Length: 403
Ligand SMILES: [Ca+2]
Ligand SMILES: [Ca+2]
Ligand SMILES: [Ca+2]
Image (cartoon, rainbow, N blue to C red):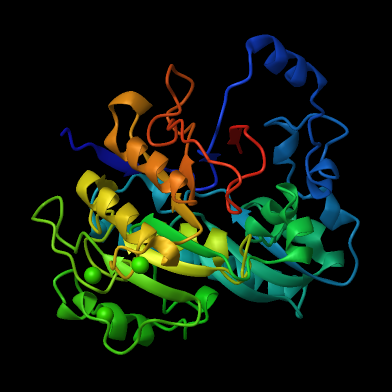
């Protein structure tokens, strides 16, 4: 048997519902495509359309025009003409430290000048490394004077950003479903790099101390091989680690704790599974009431996923307690991963997807992450799984859906 290596998809939101029963003849498909009404972008994006195109030149005005129309005290970001540490092309750490101190002196001198013009102005933040800039709290009446300082390149608004999921849920029309059921009663196995079940998005404490208690402080820490009395939790209810922390640089080393290897751990490439699980069933996810099964099948130190562990993980999802009775199977298996160019007839994981579908499990897998080239879907997303009707958990339609 050829054991493929599967790779975590870069964009967890690019998914294909694998379960299909038939492919419509080309003529019908073409007619449906011609009649399809495409959704418009979310309203918040429509509102962002510009009356005139944004160009490099008109984007570089010295003062953000919105600030000139503002009143009262404002937070403004002031960028300077002199280069940041990053822009200074320093070649050793000592020069970088020296350049940072030069910039800091320049910034403090500038702030002193501003406070002589506007005594109420104060500095909120300063950066020298990635950008040479300070953030000021200043009265809008003084903005032109601030921008006139010879060291200043630009004065602009401080823009706050928001989590992408806040618009994703309504855009994929999941909001309508959430009004009916937020996934309550649905079991979803996330076959990935594990889940950080101590994360606040899953009802955990969300502290570094809680994570360290569950994972430890290095990939060789024994705490990432044991449940330590910290698992299961209310949201992440079942789990298994089919990989361990060393593979592919060492042997597969299964253990009962699939906690994801997070960024606080040295030499760690994890977190993908936690990210995917948050999209699915985190506090602000698509279906925040689902029960998550954390099935670790991907490496903690690379982006590879073990073909062996994936098959074992699918088997686990179909019969979590291993007693041969699949009535305890999950409802959905999510695999945000794939192998480029895989085809259903020569891929064992695709065959396993078909088997899981016959057991009544809907499998969701990534597709379209390999750019615009032939066979872009890859495997197991290309699996021609059949859903036997009338199984209550089978999709009602027979269409393949890419989102
Ligand atoms: Ca542990
Ligand atoms: Ca483990
Ligand atoms: Ca069972």
